[in-house]
Each structure stands twice: as structure tokens, then as C-alpha cells.
Length: 94
Image 1 (cartoon, rainbow, N blue to C red):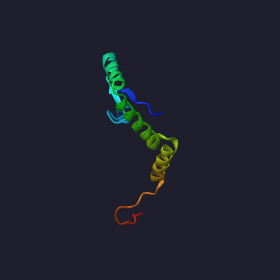
Image 2 (cartoon, rainbow, N blue to C red):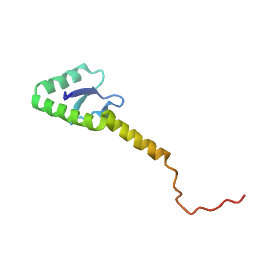
Image 3 (cartoon, one colour):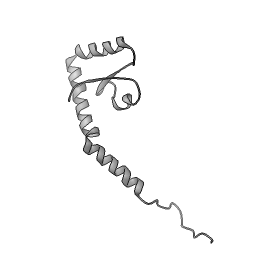
Image 4 (tube, one colour):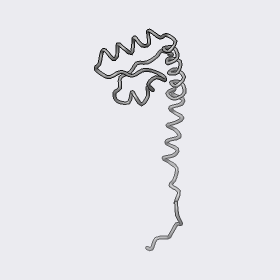
């Protein structure tokens, strides 16, 4: 939606939200840190707009259902490919 994001440094959020590029992170349970991050964005509308625009582009490129389906399909194709022998095939003695 083009809005800057503030997320907690918990779970997978820091893996998705890149600090200073498409959002800001705060310490979970720290209301002062969260408030500081909100003030940081409100006091610099230009930076907030840049973060929001970056987040929107990244979301469209990486998290759009079509992009996710393409990555998932490729992953399944790789899993379903037959294993390629790495050395000479030697018949087993029966």
C-alpha cells in the first residue's frame, strides 16, 4: 500500500522487513522504542515516503501471489527432478 512499516524484532519479521530500507524495527515489549520509531517517521515525511515506496516495490516483486507461485513451482520442479548420478554407474552384484 506504500505505507512505511514498523515491525517488532521477533520471529521472522526481521527476515522480511529490512531495517532502514523498507521499514523500521523496534524491540518487542518496548513501548518507548516503538514510540521513538513512530516519531522518527512522523518527523521525516520524505524518509517515510521512501520506506513506504520501497516496501511496496518489494512486496509486489517478492510477495505477490504470482511471484510466490512461480518460486514454489520452481522449488517443486527441482524436488521432482530425478537425481543425476555424480560418478560412473557400476552394476551391483546380485
